[in-house]
Length: 314
Ligand SMILES: [Fe+2]
Image (cartoon, rainbow, N blue to C red; front, side, top):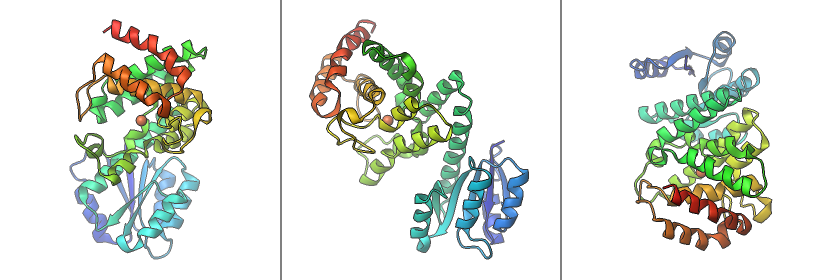
């Protein structure tokens, strides 16, 4: 059962959260009034997500979360903090004691969305850890559900990437990574993912976190380097201007260079929230224009006959 533990020393806050979750039958909420009480519950209960207040008498939020990390490393940790303590919260995230933070006073929807994403993240780590291919596939579909315009996208990217890997003389080991390349989008709010226009600078930054979030999850689930490389580096560009690391040319692992081409080809050749699909000629033209800055020239040449085949099969 999707279980969340809220830790806050103020009864009024615990009550407000309890009321907020009254109608959610899909989430079980547990409450603790202190870090010690929280740790006690964690010993007995299968807690997926912990939301902890920052300023509490006795054990502070950061100390508590770092203890949680020690006893249940997979449990996703969220920090709740007054706006004034924001720098501390960000520090906690950087030291990776927390996955996200929510500011007080909170907005109900924002808190619930953050918790829902954390629950999904927990589930993702648990299922990735099983190395079950059917599960990878269903996870890819979960991402697509969240981002409906990418319906079928992961599946198509995987088939193009496998074809390109074969043409380049590599194994088809990249199939799992291709399915999962966007799994970090689970961490991006739906409103941002499906926004039908130009994103604000801030939202764009959030979207650009998806390779890091996804690869963190994959690493935590102890997936292969190939899978992690694809998730982390599929938005890198040959000229070093991609994200998140700005790697150049062959510093970008080949499996990620392959998926990058497959990903962009499919993005152009299918409908997106903000535009219709390009026709085949224009798609190839754009890919050519992007090659010098974005793609591996040799792989791009190998990809052209594959793209032709995609067109032929309609
Ligand atoms: Fe992506």
